[in-house]
Image (cartoon, rainbow, N blue to C red):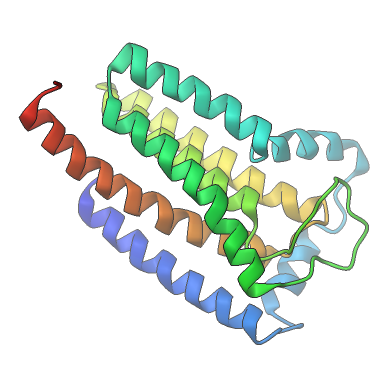
Length: 213
């Protein structure tokens, strides 16, 4: 992905993060996204709920941990991409703390519905959405960077997009987040991921020039 594209999407993500944050701060009970968008998923058949529970796990601690571990093994042992491994590990570890700080800052209650999975803490932003986009976006970036095949590049991009979207949708369907929580999680997660990707590119260039010690 070109730097200009990343910058454009970063600016869009910043505006989305600011917009949703203002709405939450103002306690907008009739935020159109939380009423209309949630209605799209209000009548999901009960037989697909187990699927979305499993999808949600891909943005939870265990799912995030398993995928991150696989990526780290590949980066360290196969690619010898130490800056990439450091970027992935640090961005995830610190994002896990940042989203908790954001939740305590906004203190938004969760939807007044029957939760279909256990939850704790406040609602905004969605930690699953935020951590999900940090992990799967940065992983896709690293996989695309290492791939010479255009078909594989497209495959990694589409898979990451589908997983990220499904994780966010699952949190709405399971009644544990408002749509704006998910959107905010995406925005903050993307901002966080892009910052770390730029840091990675900078330090990788420095590391390449110096060479491993």
